[in-house]
Length: 424
Ligand code: GLU
Ligand code: MG
Image (cartoon, rainbow, N blue to C red; front, side, top):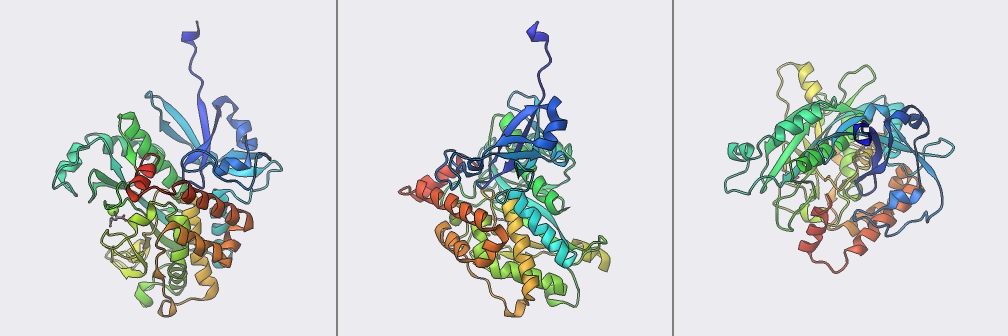
């Protein structure tokens, strides 16, 4: 009799946490209506689960209860190991009094987006470009960008793009990248919070589709210390309340509107410190070295893929189309970052540039931090970052990431890369 019973549909609600992992709990789909109101119970220290699994340090101890409440708009079918489809929803941490929890990663982005909209009337529209190594192919000479490397991945790309499109996310391109077995997937630009949700869903679908084919998509920033990095590049433009593009002005500095210039100058000024949130692993700093097409200094380049911030080329024949396509790319990010924290950091830094009235002529970025410890020191010393994050998240994040460094103490660079490649 039991064999005839239909399997229970489960909904997994999670968030991309401080480690950038999607963690949460599942519940029966039949309870969805009530779970959309009261979420699932979870405790503060869940957010402190380290990249490697165990809680290494926590300011919260074993005490306290929170709600992780699914956002129905994020619902996505996720390929399960046995060929069935599960349901993933991303959520917000609320207190048991249904107030936003100060340390919620998605809340950090939400607050930044609200502040930007309230103070400037602007919303970012973003597209994430994610690089990864697909283990379902052999490394062959001559592979970068080749038809051969495209052919060898077989139906993986087709299956992945179909899985993404089925969630209402628009794929833009899929290609064999420069590194051994490396591929890249770009999705179309989307406004605000949804852009980070789509980055999370895309990342998880990439892993899940690879896993269902018996392989892995490894998004770790570096698989070997001298290899080719996997970046997560964030393309960003600004749009006003009437849905008009607001980043571009053909007469402005580097084609940026005055608002755009202030926003980008804010990004440039804060980039070394932002790395603590956007390139937040020990392995991230093996990627951010010269000669890798990844940035090693905080700079702004026009169509330069070696810079931290790149004004992207536009291929359009009307001024309106140029304005719509005009965007800047942030390249100091990788997949060890939660897209909520990474995009939140960019929004807050850009808003700070507007608040300060920065201009590019008087803004310098400077060197990127040499390692994660140096990046965290910049974040720790930044009063403005503490004001964006709030004292509680700022303190918890620093404790979390410093414990991650300590856990890797004594390992050489290759061992560090291995540890991250095993989990990202
Ligand atoms: N793989 C490079 C990185 O780590 C980027 C290569 C490119 O797409 O320009 O960011
Ligand atoms: Mg690329």
